[in-house]
Image 1 (tube, helix red, strand yellow):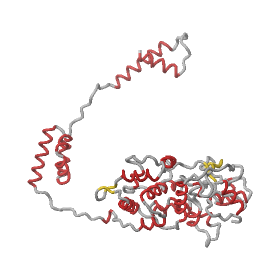
Image 2: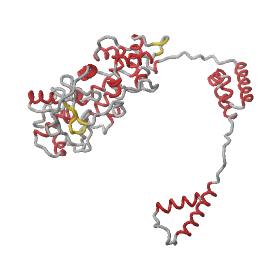
Image 3: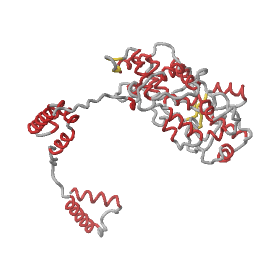
Image 4: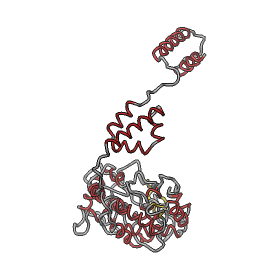
Amino acid sequence: MINLPMPYPQELIYSTVARYKIRAGLISPKQLLDDVFEDRGVVATVDLPCHLSKIANHYPHNRFNLNYIAYQHTLFPLYAPFIPESRRQECLRWMANHSQGAIHLAIGSNASRLPSVKYIRYCPQCFNEQFKDYGEWYWSRMWQIPGITCCSKHGSLANSSVEYRPNSRHDFIAPTPHNCNINPQGSVNEDDRFLISKISELLSLAEQSSPTFEQWTTFYHSLARSSNCIRGSKHIDHLCILEKVKNRWSLELLETNNLHRLESETGWLRGIFRKHRKSFSYLEHIIAIESLLEQDWSFEEIMVQVKSQTTTLPSKITQAKSNVKPDSELIEANRNIWMGLIKENQSIKGARKINQALYAWLYRNDKTWFMNTNKNCHQRHVPKGLTVNWQRRDSEFVRSLIKINDHTCFDLTLPRKSKKVVDESNLLSLND
């Protein structure tokens, strides 16, 4: 393919395709898809685009490949370190061809707590620098990251008139003076600068295999221990962690990113220090790590630490189980005690409350007899209230409705009858 532009540093591949549309003088979005992808069903996705193999084939293979485009010109590096390796590889395969939305589900983007970006954003002063260096504008990926509201060099980001996920899903739109108004910018505070620096580190990480959920779990347990947030020998002191987070981060920043429900038992802060069963967002990791570490850190160092964590896979855990069966006399004695408790309390629930240890012992050591006995001793359900004969009630209602219809059908003195008026009058007659 001729004249497909080379991506600029930190440029979204979405922006590169949009710039080609201008250079080729194309007006129809379908014609653009035919030229670049040879497929009119391609969706113009800003953050995690697919069909990248088609784009990579337009460039020299020694310069650009699929993984290079995914890590240098999309937002995939923000999510790759926090998902399992098998899922990371699957996401790259989806980005090479098509995913039909599966990639956003796989990385947790659709269920993320972070507020979504509604319009493609830009930095006006960066546009001036781009025009001075390259003679044109382009969309930088740093501007489109949820949780980032500022440019690290100039100030707050501005919203263009281009929707992040528009209804016209096949149009690639480049920045122009018509969709980007140059307005004054606000200042950048220290927390914003810190978040931008850490997210920049994530984007600059070299492609590497992802740690497992077990390694992330072990890392955060070690982090809590090194920060004296442990109760007893191994229990996480979530209140101590909560205080550290509140002392480090402002409530305004947490509320802006929808991460302020820190006290919840099922909230993200407690979840990230428990066993990882799902991935957490880059912003949640940054807030948690920065709150507990009392020194400078980088994501490169954190990834080395996480990957060095040794974990025991569940399939390799060997538990010594006793093969010695309880004595038959002990079993018989416990059976008699349990039957006595049932007769005394007239219910299994009452017997269990009195002797929970016996309930657990019989369940483990004499399960077949125990379950059969309890099944036979269950109390029958005694319904409360009146038993309604629904068939007779329906017949009475139908007869009443027929009588009402006979009295009102040919009465011309009544108001105009519509379905709504008839239904309301019937209900009033039934109530009377």
